[in-house]
Image 1: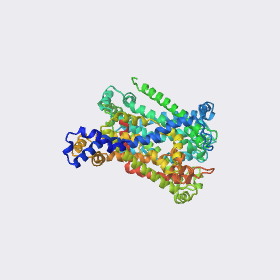
Image 2: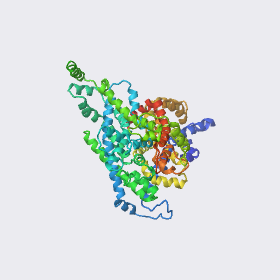
Image 3: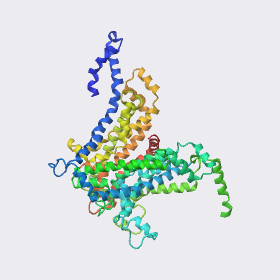
Image 4: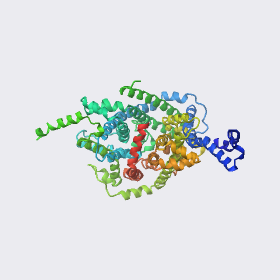
Length: 335
Length: 298
């Protein structure tokens, strides 16, 4: 819209605003106009791409998602598009698949977030020492970050195979399992453990770098004072480092909540015949994001899938807020 | 032997504590190095195992104890991947390259422009608009996938690369990141001086801002490329079953069916991972710095 206003809009404010007006050569006037237009409208042109794209492909779909959730919307029957009212949401409440997926999602989420952030903290505090080959170590912990989740998930799927998988082989060598190899995909606890391992593997290094960044801005004399008071390494970590980097800890908690509750690629590719999106023979590890995919693009019921994604959105908002609050308290925050 | 060494350790440790060194000044102990090395090994393990599987025969993979060194069957496995019907693996690699490159270039361009405007230009509503950008950072776009799919269907883009490219052309994170960088990297005086000399906004962008933000462009470019290349869910939804999958979708195609040959799947996955490993190898230092700088400021 700013483009259409450009040339015609210049005159109204123009002559009155400029005292020199008439006797200027045309070239100067043109230049002045250009300058004023440039100062006024160019900034909007520069930020426009972001807002246009966000409106069309970000905000609108999310709102429209709400509309779709209130309608019948099937991919296999284009005529069935009437209002459903709250039918999709009512269905949600009594849908065992949904509650099962919700349960799985939370289970995997807890198993992955807590060790992930704790280990990241420990790794960051070690990386914060004066080390040789420092850069090398920092780049090294980022290996999982650049590895495609599809690729690493498939590797883990092989490692945790029932027969011939390395995990079972190691356990049997260590005499930790009986005669029967563990069938990792057959039970909730074991499949959750496998998925949590993948998630932890992927994100520990990334979070460690976030923590490391925050740690480096802690003033050194605080540690000196603590050391004089006789605080050891662990004490310094929990009493000084963690409280000082609390904002970043909260940030990572929120990030991993958002990520953890939307877990999709790992559960999809853990099973053979990935695109069935079953999450195990009996949905042992089917997550909500996976269920949304199944309902929408396998069962072709987009309306119901939209309702699920709205529910997931609300759950994420609530959980992220609660988590941030708890973390803030634990870290000794005032609010 | 141990009795002679033990008295020394506590004393030196106590002395270190008394002089009170911050962690950043404390030299890493042997245990620190051992610990970090284990972490790196754990980080690299899936990559290594991918190599082992991708280079082996079925028979070698079925052995117990499992073989732990790479085999020599990589070419055979790759040939199978590339000749598979209905998967279009070569095409998918090309598609991934196109999508990631276009998205990265566009993100760098649009985000540096917007970041420049937010950091150095004065205009009505600037602060409100910036708050909106930051708020959108917290909205998981992924949750609109159902509606996005319908929207793309109406435009007729489902199943084409446009569906994957266009929504990624700018990112809120990129705008935010560039703004933070430009705030510090470009002095206000320089912009003012250029204005007085009669430079237009775009001229200032091209000759002052762009050269100054090169490091940030490198970081944002690397992060964007890696992120786009690895994206799976949305490409799967919109491109699955078409002739235009990205490499991530093609990998999941390879892994779909009643009988999955992992040596074949992972040979494909290995190929799709190599560009990213090269990026980490070349730009690792920048990526690390970028992630760390992004953290402090957010």
